Amino acid sequence: MSLSAPMLRVLDTNIVLDLWVFDEPQAAALRNHIEAGTSAWIATAAMREELARVLAYPQIAKRLTARALPADAVLAHFDRHAQLQPDAPKAPYACKDADDQKFIDLAVQHTAALHSKDAQVLCMKKRLARCGVALNPVTTIPA
Image (cartoon, rainbow, N blue to C red; front, side, top):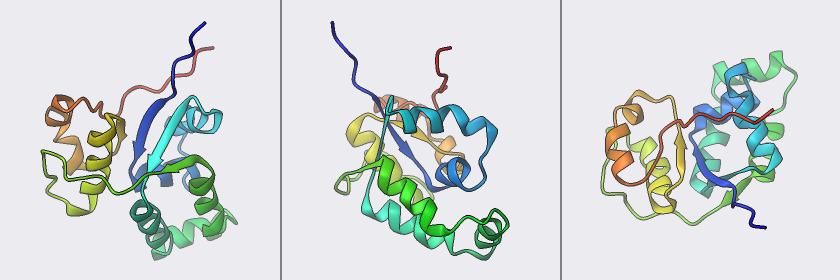
């Protein structure tokens, strides 16, 4: 009997916000995979720092307040579910948005699926595929 390893996934900051701040319905399957351990979310300390910074943005802080959700609760999800990795070496392809490069680098290094809604990342789909990175793969949980 062989059990397959959980799928490695890199989540950009907007996806993390969809999962635990905006509670987006279309993110439910991915959230379930992460929480159930059927997907392994890998991240770096720099990604956590970015999330902490974004949680303090006025429009995000307003949403957190409306939901009575402290920023620390969102960071606790990161700490509970993300498997910290060292910063990855530069990938063969550069993103026009330097803030997104760390997500690409980590996904390429680990041949992990990358989840992002950022236009600068989405336009790299074919280049990322050449590196073995699936961009926004479907995340369904069998019934």
